[in-house]
Each structure stands twice: as C-alpha cells, then as structure tokens.
Length: 233
Image (cartoon, rainbow, N blue to C red; front, side, top):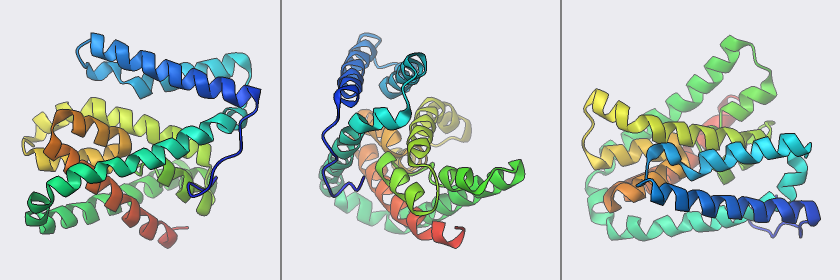
C-alpha cells in the first residue's frame, strides 16, 4: 500500500483486528499512566506481543491482519508530520547545532545499514531477510516502503521496526548513563535514529527539545537510509 493512497475498506476480519488493535493500545496507554510512565510498560511492545499471540492462537495470517492494519499505517504516516511543530519552534537551536547534528546522522545512518548487512551476511541469512533487516532503524511506514522496494518483507520490516524501537527505549537510559550522555539534544538524536518513531515518541515525553532533535533525526535518517540501501541491494 502506498501511503499516498487510501487502503481498501477492510473486510470483517480486518475490521475486527483494526478495532482490537485500537482498543488494546488505548488500554495499554492507560495502564502505563497508572504505572507512572514506566519504561517497561511500553504500549506498543505489549500490544504487539498480544496481537502476535492472538493471531497465532486464532491461526490468522498477517496478510489478513494487514487488511485493517493498512489503515493504522496510513494514520501513523500522517501523524508523523505532527513532529514538525516542535522542530519549527526550536529551529534556532537546531540550526546552531547543524554541523554536529548532520555529522552524527551521517555516521549513525551509515553504521546502522552496514552493521545490519554485515550481521546478516555473517549469519548466512538470505537476501530477502537481509534486505528487511537493513531497514530496521527507519520508522515503520518508511521501513515497509523501503523493504518492498529492495526485495524485503514489508510486514516483517514493520515488526522489526517496532521491536527495535521498543528495545531502544528500554536500553537508552542505561546506555546514556554508561557513556555519560547528558545533553538532551544528543539523546534526542540517538532516540530518533535508532528508535525511530517509538524512540521519538519517548523523546517527546521527556522534553520538547529532545523531541525536536529526535523528530528531525528520524526524518533525515529515513532519507539517508533510503539513499544508502541501493548501494547494497
């Protein structure tokens, strides 16, 4: 599905899973709020786990789920544009840090693609899985589109992007303390590049400035990754 066009109206099965996903996410958000915003109560992590378990138990193919999930993908793609507001409001701070920002993005984006491809090669994975893994640090709509273009599996790319984003959010506080990263701008860039949309959402929760750098990093990383992947596939 192109994010520039409306997906088809889901059938009864697709509509059921679309509504189930929305209800589970709303419930997970409420639970996290009750737990004081615990990192271990990430809504997307638990919703994804419950949905995968439910699909497996009900013997529902991911392609059937995707009939309703395409509408969520469209909503996600559209909602991503909302990050432009904090980016614009902090444009002067971002402009002042433009050189280190772009340098870190170039290194981070290149390293993410190279490490993914190298790891897949060492493990002997086939080209389809390798192509899918190479998109892992981009946000879900971009990951699915890139995977489709270079011969990967869009649905698997979606799952990997969600998993990678949640792991990033869980590990980031520990890693920031370990290496002594206290600048919220640097934290935002790291969360945006490695954690993509989920990391950016967490950065926005932490501070307006961190969210601005994370959102811009996520967007630029998607462009850079899209430019780098044709060199490998």
